[in-house]
Image (cartoon, rainbow, N blue to C red; front, side):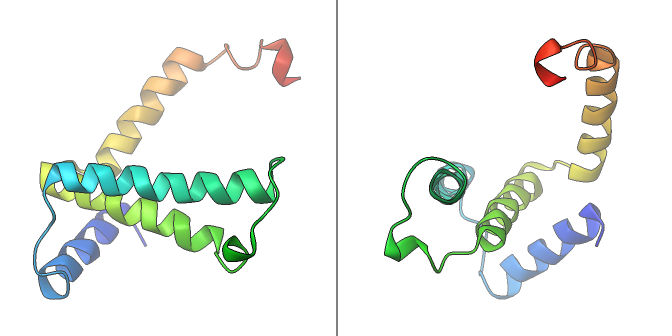
Amino acid sequence: MEIKEAQKIVDEWIKSVGVRYFNELTNMAMLTEEVGEVARIIARRYGEQSEKDSDKGKELGDELADVLFVLICLANQTGVDLENALKKNLEKKTLRDSSRHKSNEKLK
């Protein structure tokens, strides 16, 4: 699925199932909450914290999809074409970081 298609699918879902978009501030708070859920799984499964029984059934992929869903909602309601924005962002990073990471001794 292309990013443009994902934005369209989310928009159609919001309008048919979700009724309407939550406002931008609510979606920003929801995005923060979803990122926190991803952080919790990463800290417990890949970090040094022990995993609680209540966290064991949670799937990282599902939580990452929740983050992506809310991020797409924010893009849709603010008129951002994520596909175009990502392309521009990668071009910026390539110009800025073309030799920086390769010369970083910490990454070798």
